[in-house]
Length: 189
DNA sequence: CTTAGGATCGCCT
DNA sequence: GGCGATCCTAAGC
Image (tube, rainbow, N blue to C red):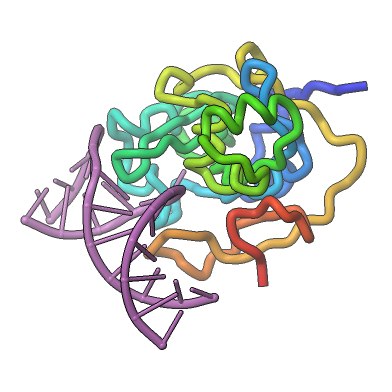
């Protein structure tokens, strides 16, 4: 039986803790999605984080209440989905980097224009395209439609390593993944 | 297999 | 003017 995540308590923790606990949890947007297999944590005292230099119109949601979606545009082209953590005003979040497709795979294929299941949601920009996430989702609660977060029934085996695509704080091991998953954006080593 | 370049938005110096 | 929490395609080895 699917068990919804208690977002009020779940996202009150620090971003690294939340990022690790998210591995294995199922996320659906309008009923389409799958199992989270890769995340990255970002925090206020973190040179790689959007919140590091303070609040701007773009990252304002990061400084809002936890348990909400922070969606931003990456490289002017792609959307990226984050979950706000900790507490109001802090500026912590978790980037969802990869999902194992589970529900609505044909719809994802159509949205992505790709047949290979492994390329549907393996990357932050890809999964937003597959789940049709845009700026319109920025600031929305994660415990209400169109979002649905479902707890995993078994404990996940989680690996950690340095984050991807950043130039600051490159050695901080705040990237988390489901051990052995075929749906990671890049393998862990 | 690896590398290089382009697309293009928001905020920075 | 520059630089990203990226992805795709094309070309080279």
